[in-house]
Amino acid sequence: MVSKAIARFSRISPRKARVMVDLVRGRQAGEALQLLEFTKKSGAPILKKIIESAVANARTTSPGVDVDALFVETAFVDKAPNKHMRRRRPRAMGRATRIQKGLSHITVILGERA
Image (cartoon, one colour):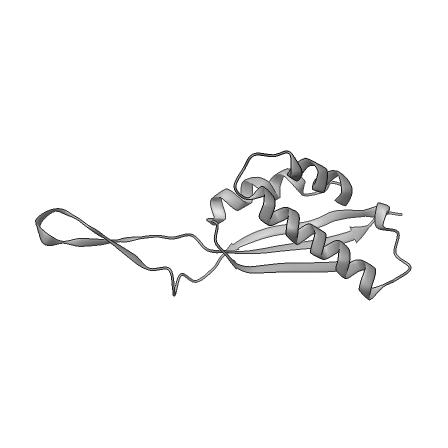
């Protein structure tokens, strides 16, 4: 592990974020950033920002690291607790049901290929 970046409580559902994470897992960091820039999915800008942060963390923590050799070693999405985004929707006969607003914890770990 060279560097790590975590975005907590991202306002995207885990299901949508996992599509983008699966797209970039195992790719070179530069290739992943370029791919995310031209992808028209809602999770692309969020994941792009996380990968850029991980690259910046790699530069800061170990100055001798080769940025071109970095790749997305591990990336995963977990469901965040939905404590503050609770919503209600009116239903028939005076009832109300809950609307699930998706929140995610997205983690990206970059490694270095020899």
